[in-house]
Length: 240
Image 1: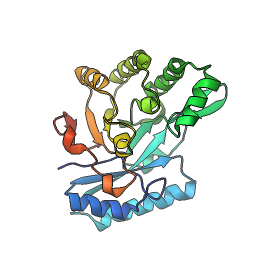
Image 2: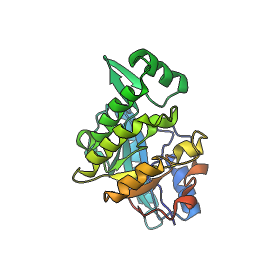
Image 3: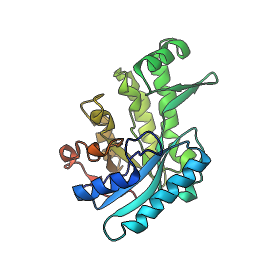
């Protein structure tokens, strides 16, 4: 019986309402579900989002445990006291005052490497992983999202040194966050394996780190996407 705590709804870029996801979780037999809308959201949308999830918690009490979370980008600010948990994520790097997306589109990513980094993917990777390593300090996150998201449009293995350094910093963090095994890119046809790749996963586990499964769900039909193939991984079953 799986649960998923990385989900997106119509409050950000997801396809379904929170209640539709709760009903799908019940259909699949999930003991828990967590919502993790993208931050930043407008102030009013944050209030509406929180009110909706808290209402569902009461409505479905005794049938499924529902948690209110947020996926906080490192460059956004939130009131953490509103949420049961925080997923920390890096979707952008900053270079010479420019905010550059690493996962919005292949063209945008390649343009950023070419224009801001003189074609040096490794230099961008170093900036990206320095931000990932800083996530617990900057966001107070319980979970690190899609650790090697930067490989979505580039599989240049030179990024491994920067990734290893970030993992070492995260392993030394107290309290240590969970690391997602994230199947979102698989669900959308970008990858055939989850984030992070296996060598990084093994390095995290050998250092005593813990894992949590996440589908980065934007569509209720993929709430537990590819989880069956990951059930042998030593993962925790709840985010908090």
